[in-house]
Image (cartoon, rainbow, N blue to C red; front, side, top):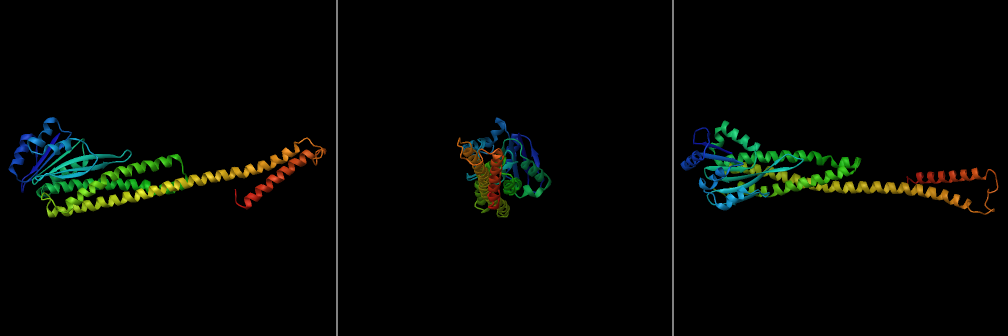
Length: 319
């Protein structure tokens, strides 16, 4: 689906609906042209080469999904790849390819992206957005993407912060699965956020003529937020490593506690079994063997011995 907006200087943005209208708007070289391609048809994909004249390599990279943010300078335009984060459980990354020129911006993506819909609506309501040029439109898009990523990471922090407390109370296999799930999600986020931070850093330095000094400030603000996200992910990784150590420590202590209790009761039963084994021998010289109350006396001795050992272990806090 092709959606296009064109704003001439001093005029509100108007919607373009065909390839010919897009070509005519681009040919004027005036104002700001934004073309959005969502799951484009083969004919709509042809606009990238026939109308805008993008390099074959950049078109091929655009049409193939990648998990790595990037920035390529082709002289007359920039080809950028960004990723937005859509929710957790499961974590999903949305790829957005952007072609940025002096008076145009082209976005390509698979499936609807709410960020683009919000920015497109803003362009229609606030005339100054497109009047400032395509770099300002890109800054608005990346600003919303950064806000979405930050929101996802802040939601992730709620699960990480209380994890250690839950582990102390109940270290179980579900808690271990939660640790591994969080580590996997944080690793996926770091793979996206790390390279994306470098791309934003280059845009914020003003090294490209397509980016005005005024909008470099906006890119710098987006870069600062992505840096904050990156720092949060690093702290989450350390917290999860600590949580794993806590889990192993709690499980080890629980195992040691169980072994200690079993050892104590084994000693008690072994002592009683020793007395029973001695009195089970077939010798007449064993004390109390010929007394009619000898059996009950032996049971009392066994009970007293077991009770004495139990009190001794309790006093030493072995159990």
